Length: 281
Image (cartoon, rainbow, N blue to C red; front, side, top):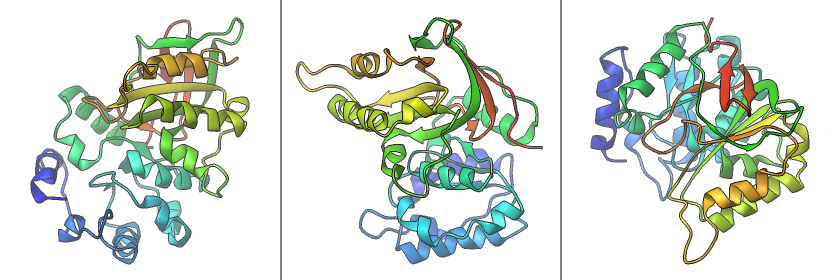
């Protein structure tokens, strides 16, 4: 990762918080940000340092899942602090949630410098204010079954590809009664269909209370294939639980932060997600 990709985000964060990072974040090894050993050592160091009161992931990318079997999350379990990221970081969020640690699905540093002030302000509020954040309104209902158009549960999930890859592993986030949030980038509609079908075959729709879909970026069809929106309606519109789409999170020009594991209320008739808890105490 070139240094200039990080600069706008670090400038934004540095105007509000005291930042600490080293040149290790710019390391590369094939398609990874350095070796597994380097990345594990870096993460272990910041998790064990009690003076670090929040952890922001520099970028998403690839390789987080490779670290899970060797990762010691004990320091963060004993001393919870905000852990912020999304995309490939979905695997870390899921693992933290299994340990009972609330973490924040929010912009990585490389994305932070590109977001509008409304999303940045929402992130700061989530980090600093223990009250519930503002609701999401104006969402599109894909499924609003009579008598079951409203559901309440902990918000979990993240990147669709990562969530499906965690199926059958010990790192899948707790799904029973949860509201499953999903977003994606760079997957053609047939691959979206495959991932959603995998979730169905794994019994996920029978376990969760509701589904909330964020941005689907660069997922355009080739030729006369169905659009991503058509795939969502065909795969999810028949579910007997509330399903909302076009929520303001993901890889696009917006990424409204939310806290994994906090209670939300989904109202498919109203097209809203109401947050019932904050992320910090």
